[in-house]
Length: 205
Image 1 (cartoon, helix red, strand yellow):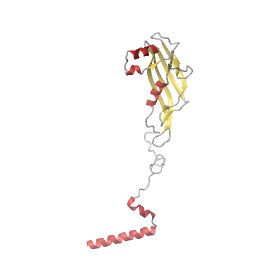
Image 2 (cartoon, helix red, strand yellow; image 1 turned 60 degrees about the vertical axis):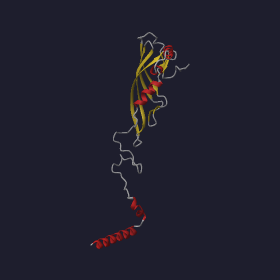
Image 3 (tube, rainbow, N blue to C red; image 1 turned 180 degrees about the horizontal axis):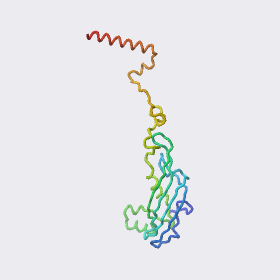
Image 4 (cartoon, rainbow, N blue to C red; image 1 turned 180 degrees about the vertical axis):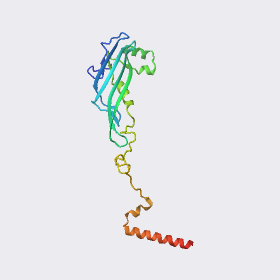
């Protein structure tokens, strides 16, 4: 049987709520964010503040938890790699079934959705999986520092926002070998090409 630590900030005790359907309790709690609350590019930093507002309702099947979470996620712009920060507000509602009710559902072959519901452990429930499922989908998939961020130069990595006119001369690969020649040699080649062009025109005439 699963055991929960009642001292964990995301483990809640429903003893005072009782089992009488219709009983309700409201809670507010400020906690430190657990690890892995986000993605590789943006996440709620471990140890940062998360604000919770909860309403616990006793129902026939268990305890219905309705609430909201507010936190700040930080990460990096996917275009220019500058730091980004986003406020995260999420709402959730989850039924934590009494252990005997959950066991009954399994015995009678409840459907997959009911079989996957969360279960009370004694009078305790762990809110972390619910918060994880609420916060992570609310995060931007590709965070940017601003909607029109131009990103970095693909040639040298310079921040294009700092220099909107930044560009690189693109040399025709057919003339790349000439870039290593001295100016005198280049001038001679140019003169030779001009002479050849003139002779060709004379023959055509």
